[in-house]
Length: 171
Ligand SMILES: [Zn+2]
Image 1 (cartoon, rainbow, N blue to C red):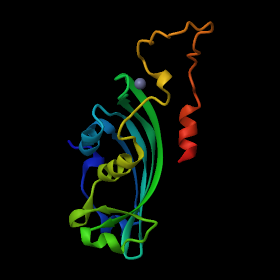
Image 2 (cartoon, rainbow, N blue to C red):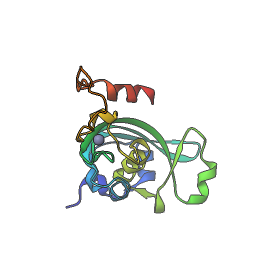
Image 3 (cartoon, rainbow, N blue to C red):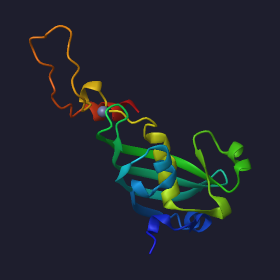
């Protein structure tokens, strides 16, 4: 049986009912995301609220979770927390895209249908880095280069629990 987030939903019905749809989507199953970021794993949870605005069906998406990816510097696993909100205008044809107000993000819902997975994927393609890297080169799991001059104090290798929070706040 296909999971609920992969089922095409009728966007007009969702908007008429001002529906709230809760979801939990495993990232490894989003094919476009996986095509962009190989070996992406993890889970995001959240809610989509459907309404209408400016003649469009609007999906208010809130999601949070963690994505596990391969660091492109050291090729070891790294995890990045994701917390994101988006206000998407669901358009039925590409031609409608230029009528979408600037504060809404146009997302194609061909035939008036969309899956929750497509909305989540659209947002994650923007939110996640195309080239995932550990926040600091020193976080990478690589063999230390032999320093030309011997340093007395070893490099601190303490964890930086707030590095990711910093990134989140900058968004
Ligand atoms: Zn790394």
